[in-house]
Structures are given as C-alpha cells and as structure tokens.
Image (cartoon, rainbow, N blue to C red; front, side):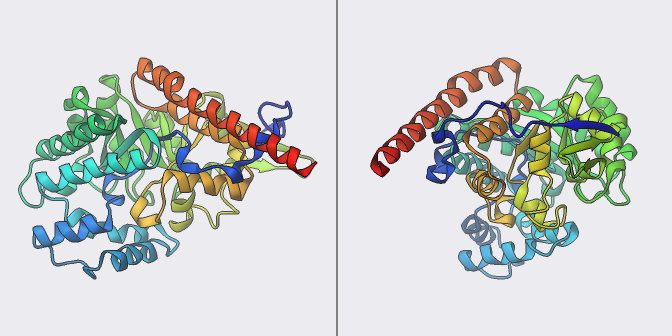
Length: 388
C-alpha cells in the first residue's frame, strides 16, 4: 500500500464565491459529456408503448406510459444487478426492426440535446436485436442511421460502442462487428453483463482482435464483483476505460489523520489516468454501492482519479446527466469547478479522435463553463451588496 496525503481540493487556491453557488445553477445549462449509457436502457416509456403496438409486442405489464415508467423505476431499485436487468427484456423486445432501432437512436440524441449534452457515447449488444430476422450488421446500420440523423439535426457529437456479453461465447464475432463499422461511427468495444462466474479473460480472442486493430476498449468491471475483475480487465484484456469500477474502493484505505493508503491496483489506475465511468444512481440501484452516501465517487475524485459521471440506464434509474451532476453537487458538495473537472475528465477520455476532443473542449466546454462562472460570481456579488 502507498500512503498519500491529498489536498482538500484541486487546486488549493480559494474559489470565488460564485463558483461555489451550485445551488443557483440550472443544471441543464451545464455542457455535459456522457460516456456510459445503454441504448436499450434509455428508451422513452411512450416510445416503448407505441413500438409495442406497432409491432404487436404483447409482453408489457401496462400500456399506460406513465405507469410503465414507474414500473421500470421500481423494478430497477431492488439492490442487485440480475433483478435490475430484468426490465431489459421489454425494451429489447420492441427494438427488433430497422425502424424501431433508428427511432430509438434518434430519440437518444434528441434527449441528449434537451439535457445539454454536447458529446455522447452510447452502447448496446447487437446480438439481442436479431429476433425478427435482422442481421447484426443491419442492426448496427439502423442504429448508426438514427444517431447520424440526430447528430445532424441537433449538432451533437456521438459515438457507438458495441457490447459483447460475458455469458456468451460469441464475443469475437462482436469484436469483428465493431471493427467492421468503425469508419461509420462505432468508436469502441465493451464487455457487459453479470461479472460473477464470467471473468473477462474468457474473452481474450475478442480483445486481441480489438487491440490488433488499434481500437478502443472499455469493460464493465468492479460493478458486481471485486478487484480481480478490474485487474483482469486491465492486465489481461487491455481496457482503456473501466465501466463503473466501484469495487476499486476495496484497494483504498482511509486513515484517521487524513491520509489514504492506496494498493497497487488502484495506484496503477491512478498513475496511468485510466478513466472510471461512474453512474451514481444506477450504482445504488444495482447494489454496486450500498447507498449514495457510501458511493466511492467523492473519494476517487478527491484523491485525483480520472472519474466521470454517467447515466448508465436513464429509463431504469429515472435519471439524466443533469440529475447525475446535481446529485453529485448536492450529496458530495461539488462546486462548479469540480463539475467542470469531471466533465473535462470525460471529454479527455472519450473514444473520439484527438482533434475532435480538443475542438469540443475549446469551443463548447470551456466557453460555456466560463460564462457560468461569470454569471454565478456576478450573482454572488449582487447578493452580497443587497445584504449590506
């Protein structure tokens, strides 16, 4: 274990009052970057009902969109990952045609625009969308068409990540699928699904294909299983980012005197700036964190890990990027500079080309945060004059 004494914040200089007044923020105005969202976990409940009627899907528990949304929310909050995933049978069930896939992808971009997201990566497993005869290539093509149309309409930059599933044996096929479509908008490869009993090292052929193609890898690791899952994701499979990574907390020990002792695995992640895609509300719903108060995000952020905030499944967890950022601000005391740091972490870690990341940072993120800093500081100054 390596001992660290970390500063109270980054940087150590006192902040202007305006930067601390996050309670005055309209969080939808914050420019946002999303790296971890599942396409089949973020549908609008109204869309599910309409698609079910159009395609004669009879499995929904109700056709009342508002009641259906509540059903998904309740089902997701049972504290463990297997039960959390049960609702996906219905979302996947209505995503089996080209039109449905294109619509869901377009509406994803539309929802991002409404929430102030300027760059978004979304992931899914194409193999689950072939029940009515589509090939996996046709599935990917339909989703890319929807994302592209949405991006052109709303000016949102995006990327698609292809997921393989831990409990299947066709991960190499998924990897080759991702590589085939990289020139059309697929930006990376993921391994998803329940971790227990399905170690990532069983899928080495898929990851070797991705690495040989000089492609990008993110892996769900440390969400429902311990440090071994994270270690394998990094050292066996070559992950460039970690999905969730909450169990990395097991390798960090806080001391009464304010120091932390960091184990070798956590130190490796910290030193190499390996991004950790954290999802506050989902992590509580799946049991990856016992509660919001027990979530490791504030510790990771304070120590200096490259953490970013994400939604995971907007429908299941009844969330958005605005809600995740507001939750972090209110629960953990993040100020506007912290929120900017987390957003920059995400953009630096995106699987977009370097020139695109730099352009978004300098043309979208920095100017927007500068405006918000100025507005909050002016508001704080005016309020101070009124008090006098």
